[in-house]
Image (tube, rainbow, N blue to C red; front, side, top):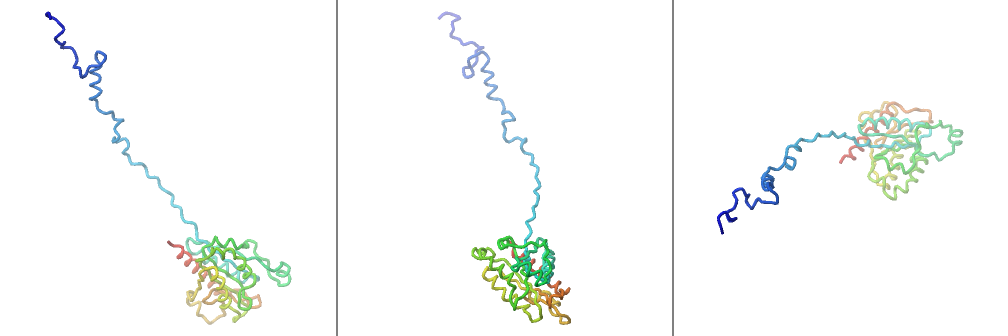
Length: 266
């Protein structure tokens, strides 16, 4: 081959490892390979390291525990105790008490005209058996009939067969308060014989014992009530509950509320 033949490579030719189709694309490729990763591709950058703001959660208090004060009262004596029961129960934080009447079994003519009973307060609703399931505890009040609960209250308990069948009320605490016409008329036996209603439902009977303190031992005045529960002497119907009898009722409401609250704690 003669001088100047094509055997000597040109000094201007790029190395084959960087050669591409095009005059200067080899340099561009090398720059692209050796370029640092762009910031937006680095998942460990500080752009996401800021601590998110902590959103304060509203603390929602639990719903109040419910005590139903369910009673029958013809002349108002049991109702006066029931109202003080409600006051005492609501003295415990987190407890709500509601007053309910049981249905009357006598006709209005008999109650108002023949028995001369006062008109009942329309603001106190009549309860149905099914509503008992909503309560966490109960205070049942009724007058005596020969040492046992009045027929109106017994008829109401007789209507709770559906709850009994499912044992819906099992484990729920309940107490009693009563009204009698005389001192030996059944302040204890009326509550005592009523315990059978709770037993068949699997409920817990809560007596007040002597937790009322000195008020349970005073002998200087006539006072209803017993370790079974609060009570009032109605006499011929004209005697009103004394402040001592009402205070005992308020104490029982408060005492029951503390028991219901204690049982509800996890």
